[in-house]
Amino acid sequence: MDNQWLLILADVLLILHTMLVAFVILGLVAIFGGHFLGWQWVRNFWFRLSHLAVISIVVLQSWLGVLCPLTTWELTLRSKAGEAGYEGSFIQHWLQSILYYSAPDWVFILVYTVFGALVLASWFLVRPRRSRD
Image 1: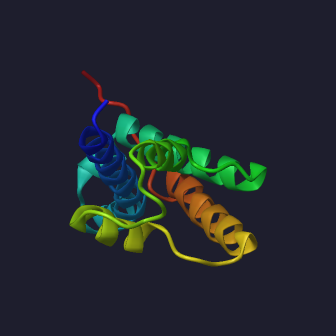
Image 2 (image 1 turned 45 degrees about the vertical axis):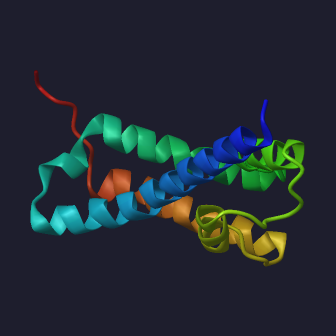
């Protein structure tokens, strides 16, 4: 496969990864904010289940010391394209600046675990509902 296509696929994965992070963070903000604003969609069972599933995977990976498969796949594609590190396109530069920052592992484990606990707490504080259709 052409190196340019490998880099495009890597950027697509980076965008997907960023969207998942935004889904988890903004989803929790929407759940609590929506509760106070009376938004019924924040109680949608499938939205809430997918939200809980994504953060659960993140927390589990952090506890096990496993790198996110999206990160691994993206780095593999960049490596196959002959790109070292995080140099490259505009999209890549800015999204990686947001997603990847340096801190000790324990910081990430703590942050992910606390955030996961907040998402779990949201199940009890803002109960999801199955549709009656």
